Each structure stands twice: as structure tokens, then as C-alpha cells.
Image (cartoon, rainbow, N blue to C red; front, top):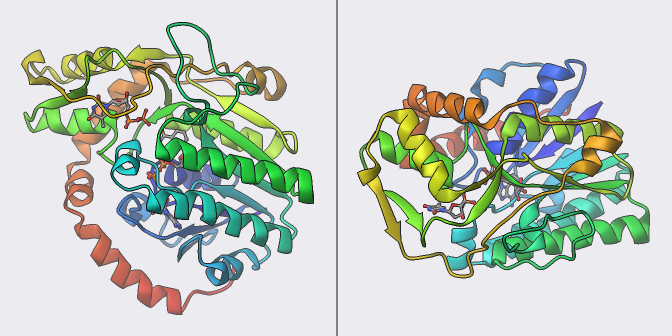
Length: 342
Ligand code: NAD
Ligand code: TYD
């Protein structure tokens, strides 16, 4: 299969590119990524020279670039590219609407033109809004996004849905809970806590730390997307979750314990505006219909994630400094000009 992955230089997309080449060595993967602050080719260095893999730097809002990429005989698209951080969407939502909504529509049009056989849209449980102390999000829960990030993802989900109903484009939507694992940009909770704790810096906890998230290891999420790509029903939505609900303060304490650091590093800070209280996913549909289930227990996944961040100091330093962006941009501007067809 010739597979196009958008946002493959980011956290989940990068882990997915690597999984595809490992699990399906006969596949060809082309990775289209704009390399925003969140895209890092350093994370995919081990794939350099792999004959089944190509990188193309480009914006999913750029019709010509998308066409150039998709018209090379691509059969399936897995769409990860997005602005993904809630806090940034509160400061400025423009890029979120641009990439998440408009970019998705550009991809959908190109997918129609190129008769793509499968379009997997990677979305989030945040489109459902917030839960009280009980209950779960199912695939039938009405969309009620609360942050500009979640609203832009909900907008993209609805566009994807409409292309199935109107144009019979063979789409599938996944909605996953909070991911953790290697190569996550250290502005998100778990890598931020690990990298701050390592440097003895304060660990910022929003509000009173009672907000609950459902955590899933990125490799389990990627395995679920792999399953949906190959076996998912056209037009369906599948919730994906870790069956692992934890209040933020518990996560902070677990990480401090794993790193043998004092709880005095915990610093309660002003709450995030509109902070969703609780996310909890009912993922029984993907489990029963497609036979996927989680394989990585949270304690083990978290321990390995802490170890990974401690062992990959150079990656963290580079991502935090932002140096890699200029460096790779230059290198890939040159390479883009000589990009060869798959
Ligand atoms: P990320 O921020 O780590 O990576 C996003 C990637 O998209 C980056 O490589 C970036 O360069 C690229 N990108 C951004 N704008 C682009 C554009 N206009 N054109 C091309 N590339 C562009 O994000 P992530 O955490 O890996 O999330 C990937 C997807 O999964 C997103 O769609 C997100 O909504 C969804 N998701 C994430 C989580 C999570 O916990 N991280 C959970 C559920 C769903
Ligand atoms: P985050 O990783 O930003 O994911 P999301 O907002 O998409 O769930 O945040 C996870 C939880 O951690 C969320 O409840 C906000 C909280 N949080 C903090 O308490 N401190 C922080 O510095 C960050 C980044 C998040």
C-alpha cells in the first residue's frame, strides 16, 4: 500500500510512521509535514535512507503541495497534522482554524480527486466537551467542544463526516484520549513534568489538580489506528481510550516518585480558562468490533517514558531551544526541490 501520513514529524504521527514501516515492511509511506514548532525531523532520524519512506515538507492548506503528494499513487491517507495544544489555542486560535479546519478540507478535496480508498481522520475525545464525576463519552455523545482547539477539531470531524455522506468518500474517524510516550513535545503535561523535575524546576499544576484525563500510551493509540486503517467500517467513528482515568495531581506525584524528586516542586498555578473537568472514554466499540485492546499498563508505560526523557537529553534540549527548526528547514528546502516521486 502507498500511504500518505500528514503531521508525521509530530508526536503521534512520528510514532505511527515508525510503526507502519515496522509492521508493514512492504508499504511505502510519504510524510507531509509543515514542520511547525511541533514538528521535529530529529524524531525520525533512524528512518533516513529507508527506501519505503519519503518526507515532503509542506502545508496541508497548500492545495498544490497536497496534490503533488497525493497524486503519486497514494491509496490511503492517515491525517494527524494539526495544531494540537489547548493553551496555545486560548492565546490565538487563528492557526487552529486554518490548519485543523481548512487544511482538513483541502485534504478531503484532494482525496476525492485522487480516488483515495481510505481516509483516516485522527481526532480527539475533547470534541465531546467535559464530563462530571460519572459517565463516559460514547461515539453517540453529542459534540460540545469547549476550547478553540476542540472546536476546530470538531469542525474538521464534521467536514470529514459530510464528505462521507455527500461524496461517499471512504472515511473513518478516530477519537482518542490523552496520549503519552516518547517524542512528545514538552509543552504537554507529562513531558513538561518530567523535564522540569529533572532540572529541579517547579511543576505547574492548573487549579487544584483535580481535573481528570484518561491516559493511553502512544503505541497503543498507533496500534488502534493501524487496526482502523485496515478493518474500520466506512463512515464510522471509533473512540479510543486507555481505560486509565487519573486526576492530574496523581500524575504529578507518580512522576516525582519515579524520579525520586520532592513534592515541594509542585506549584499550583492559575487555572486554564474553560478547563474541562473530566474526560473518560468508552472504547468498547473498537474493542468488540475490531478486536483492538490496550497492551501497555500505565505504570509500566509511564516508567519507560520517564526513562526515555532522561536518556534523550539532546532531543529535549534541541526541541526546547527551537534550534532544530531553522536547521532542518534549510536542509529540507534544498531537498524539496529535488523531491522524487515515490
Ligand atoms: P503534535 O503537535 O505533536 O504534531 C503535529 C504535527 O503536525 C507537527 O509535526 C506539525 O509540524 C504538523 N503540522 C501542523 N500544522 C501543519 C500544517 N498546516 N501542514 C502540515 N503539517 C502541519 O500533535 P500530536 O500530539 O502528535 O497529535 C496528532 C493528532 O492527534 C492531532 O490531530 C491531534 O488533534 C490528535 N490527538 C492528539 C492527542 C494527544 O494526546 N496528543 C490525543 C487525541 C488526538
Ligand atoms: P495537556 O497535556 O495540555 O492536554 P489536554 O489539555 O489536551 O488534556 O494537559 C493535560 C492536563 O494537565 C489538563 O487538565 C491541563 C493540565 N496541565 C497542568 O495542570 N499543568 C500544565 O502545565 C499543563 C501543560 C497541563
